[in-house]
Image (cartoon, rainbow, N blue to C red; front, side, top):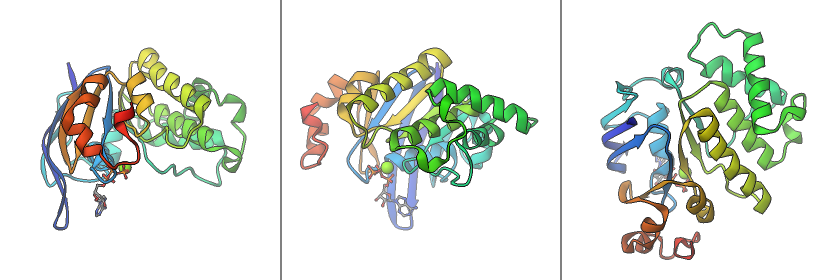
Length: 248
Ligand SMILES: Nc1ncnc2c1ncn2[C@@H]1O[C@H](COP(=O)(O)OP(=O)(O)OP(=O)(O)O)[C@@H](O)[C@H]1O
Ligand SMILES: [Mg+2]
């Protein structure tokens, strides 16, 4: 069953058409990777889904409900959370407080008080393996830990759909390993559907069940990682791109 339906989505920024007629169904419980060259429109698609940007055409349905023009706080309350490409932690708060904010503002239950939010924060910090850093200052976390903090914050709002924008960029081999394992656990144990933008092709091949390739705001391929990466259109779109999808 589809949890998310995009129908004929178009997004213009002034005269520039950045998303050019995207239609996509995402099944409940799948791990879908979105790949494509820089500037293809990947981040824009996720921002449209979560209501940070509004489409100029088309419609978005989540669990059968039209969410096309809802503001982002409403979309988050309905159960969609996003980890953005550039982490933006609250610098004056502790690790735990940062995650609790996700429960306070992301949760569908508007009665979530401070105490419940902190409890949800503790639970999610433990889930991502950062429980012992709860009272730490944000500056003491490395990049990998900051990404896990962002994941915990997104999860603290109890989403049904999680959107991840390049959360594995710049990680070393063992950090990449634990990130892949964590995303799989999020789906397997929490039952959360994941749409995940990624440039690290090894991770895509290992973790994604389905890959959608965007190029100039259009979907040029949609299938299993291995099929998609052998597709001549995909190889052509990536020729000259630093990521070298053809090596995957
Ligand atoms: N707010 C905006 N105003 C104007 N143009 C924008 C805006 N946001 C994105 N764009 C443009 O839209 C295009 C797609 O951007 P987007 O960030 O979605 O690409 P991307 O596929 O995520 O790229 P990357 O891999 O570099 O993150 C780019 O040409 C970008 O410059
Ligand atoms: Mg991007």
